[in-house]
Image 1: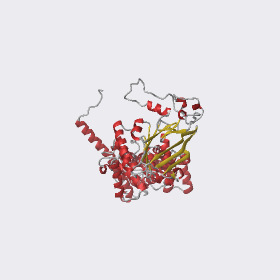
Image 2 (image 1 turned 90 degrees about the vertical axis):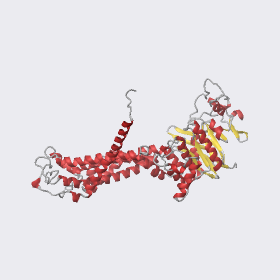
Image 3 (image 1 turned 135 degrees about the horizontal axis):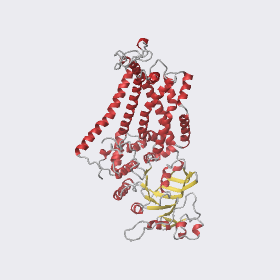
Image 4 (image 1 turned 90 degrees about the horizontal axis):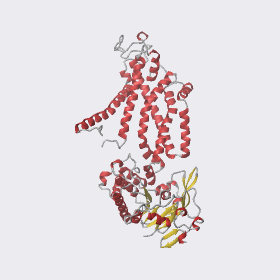
Length: 296
Length: 314
């Protein structure tokens, strides 16, 4: 074996230190980003230089401060009707982050509970729950959202409801598969042997063992929810204007992307940051939650 | 001493599959006395494990079902108990050790918590008392420095240690009956011998009755007071003389004989969906007679506590 790397003590040491620093970074950076964004959302009224809905027709389509014609009065420029993009991105964090959080809480909980029940109990319960899941997966979500928006009117809670009403299905599917596998695990049999009830086994033994895929799913959902909200906003079934959300800002700026790129770029950047931070944090958590990978 | 603790009468357990009914256990009767070790031996798929699971009523539902018979533990027929009453029996009266210690512990909890769970399920006690019980269970299984190991995760332990932890979970409530389903097959030979010796000792101190499921005659000879030989869902003999038992014993490798090839029994066990008429061993039996293919042999007593189901003895 000529290609085998021979590691000297110093190399091992430095590569370990690098791994350690990198390992820390995958935690520190995403957490910092998320905490900053959450704080931004909470303290939006103090941080935003302008009210997010203040229209100033004389100052429309101003570029960000670093471009030609930009000014520090509007750091990230203004949109078609002269609203400050920075202020709107800051206020948009409130809507986009809280919608994501709520939707993930709702869909994650429903999906996990139904998935564990279906997977663990099996038989008819499983068949029944999984057919409902199939139906939910087969329905076009956007259509349901538009339907809801026309029935109860577009708004914050309509968006939450519209994304949640079908969004639990992928969770249920994933968790059911895991529960199905774990039901046959020897430790579940061992729990039955010492007289644990089914409920107890599902909560105490099955659930902690499916946290890993659940977390991966949650972090992936952050992006999905924000993007779905954007799609709904674009179709007029999302957060109604003038309330800013990252989604409706991106769709507002879509038509002007070649002339005023900043209108959709900055909210898009915010979406990208959240999704990335979520994914990195998910990776880190997955490693930490697995006792076999835990640093001794 | 020799009070009957468990009496299994004509136990029938079937699995209902798309292809039909599989009679995994087909009329098994045996009894286990207090403080005694009863061995169940036989080859793969003969119904040993299913018999064990049937006693605990933990068959994989809904396919597996006990279709007949009685399982009497200390005067109560377990098959008449409700699910809730049965849960109270499991762990407290009857416990079981599974085959593979690498998978029978939950990877996400420290071992102390896993033993404590069993204690808490059956006894309402304050936390420090539970801790004491856990430590004494670990001590019973001869785990060194038990106080230090409570917080250890299963992955930090070797196979032999894990199997002791599994044993500690099983023994934590001092059950009257322990079903050990090949607990040593996953361990290497020296650890295996230690583990068996340990259980002999535990039996002496706690007076627990053990049903030892195995296919290893060495283990049987070492551990068991009595033994039932199972073939195709039936106990063909309780001790030794059935042609199947002799054939099984002949297939144990021996140091004192120089054979070219290891002896093996010709053919395969019959399909449990489609059993042959008569004795279920006759197609492979070297001593088969005409009657064997026609009628099922009755069980006859041929000595003290020794019975055989074979035409050779009827």
